[in-house]
Each structure stands twice: as structure tokens, then as C-alpha cells.
Amino acid sequence: MNDPVIYFKGYKIKKYNYIYRDEKLEIEDGKLPFNMSVNPQISSDFKNGYIVVSVTLEAEDFSVEIVVEAEFDINVEGKENIEKFLVVNGTAIVFPYIRSMVSMLTSLDSGKAFILPTINTLDLIPNK
Image (cartoon, rainbow, N blue to C red; front, side, top):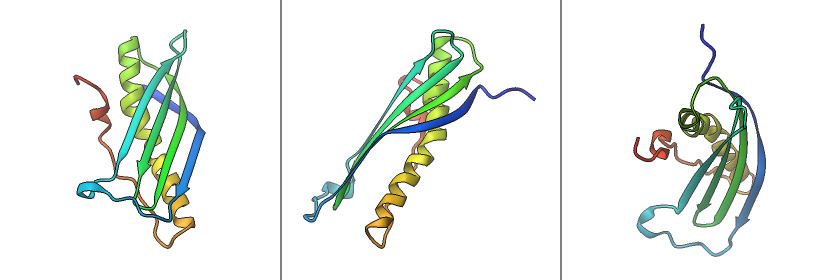
């Protein structure tokens, strides 16, 4: 059996900011302002990779900002290939943890948990 192209070693929460608002934010067209960015980084020996995933969400009665850094062992050649695997596969691995964080926190101060939508991580690669 082949080794995985990237192997997930774990993540750290670098920032977690949750603000509850008494006054509701008006949401246009029923679409919540949701932004996400992924920044890949590779060690100089090309053996370890990192992604920093930043998520911001403005819901009607709260806002959330989360920054997570994840670490991976790398088993693939070429910087461009490594970055693609980190962004696409690494984000697919880490995003469920971020979704869980938002869900758990929002369920603590209300009777209803907020669940972030799923994402297509292939859309994170420009000119795929």
C-alpha cells in the first residue's frame, strides 16, 4: 500500500473570536457573509507542509473569526504539486474541525447550533 500524499499531523487554533449581537444584522438575499482563505507553507526540505485556514462569518446575531494552522508530512515531489495537495486535500481534512468548532460554540448560547456549509476544496485552486 502506498503512503498518503500528505499525512495529517494535527492542528492548532491560532485565533477564535465569537461575538454575539443583541441587534440582528440584516442579511441581503438570505446569503450569509462567509469568507475563507487558505495559505500553504512548505518547509525548506519539502518534507513538511502547513496551511493556515482563516474563516469569517457574519450571521444575523453573531460573528465568528477562526484561524487554524494545520501540519502535514509530505510525500510528493514539486513545490506546485505540494501546494495543490495542501490547499485541496489539507483544507478538506481541516474544514470539518472548523465546522465542528462553530457548531459547538453556537449551540452553547442558544438552543440551535449553526452549521457552516460544506465547501468544494477544488474551487480553492485558481485555474484548476
